[in-house]
Length: 460
Image (cartoon, rainbow, N blue to C red; front, side):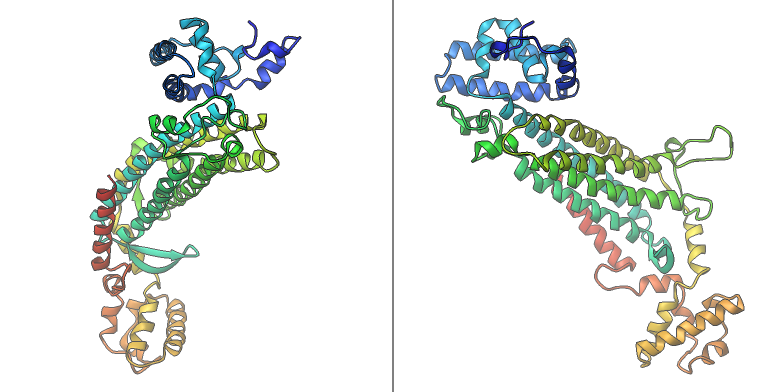
């Protein structure tokens, strides 16, 4: 079978070159987008009298026939036709005859493939935003049930101060909210049409690019044809956003791995999201959060891979740009799989409130509150900090926690201590006292939950 572009060549392409340069094995994922763009393009060609109305209608009919076969799984793509564009054009010519060759009037594969990827990412970005909202809803649901649940808050993975478990979970809600905002903002750059740029310099045909943008629901067209065919910033931006999102997923996953361990026992993951050991029958492994954590690396790799492909490319199109798709597809599929699992993983998680409560009574994470207690009684905070540091050392040496110390022990460090210090040291008081905006008190967490729920309602 002669190549559709083979007129200039005197030799057949080496079969190894065919295999090496063909992209149909992966860019067939863009088949529906390719047809979608072609339908708009051919309608414009007919409206601009570049081809006849009858030709335009015949080509459109052929494209719809191919789309129907594609939806039924009846299309077989061929490596010898290189890519999704040439495969569909060959299928079209087979379907309606030589007039199918007029479809490519006024365009190039360079602007065609860019258009396909814009269409693909526009759809996938919208879908990923919805999946993120399901994860956020799961976090809100768990938070509502755990406003009064107290666990140790950590810095440096050392116990720092008691916090509401809802407050801890909602920190991830806001991380994902920023991810969602980044995805939404990226649509401004995704929703720009490259079609009509031709190979790099535009076309001699009197096409109407704005009409194609209107038909495909793009906000605008690229103002520079060379930029249109060589720009992959919109994919880089998506991969960057995806990398940040996967980093957030990984951090949450790490917490679930730690919290579900025998050493912590703060949560238990549902059996449906865990696996066992082939040799140790007692094991219940948190494989899902571990894999979520692990898959972050492949998304980071997809970003670095495309940055590396692009860093030395001159304008305009280069064959290197064929390497822009597999990483994009891989990242989309990784995010889809991760978000689809993360939401039910969070929803079905059991919270061991007793274990968390016990943990905050067997540490010194209430020490800051004694310093605040002394400062409120007039002792400068730096001096109060020094006093409580000495008290903590003393308590550790005596094998006691701060609530276990007697009043005479406290007063040996400062006469400002009175019986009310024991109220200050309870986990409930420690958490409830932090009423500053964005703090961990139940009052503030409830307000935060309202903000979170309003975000989900307004963005639905």
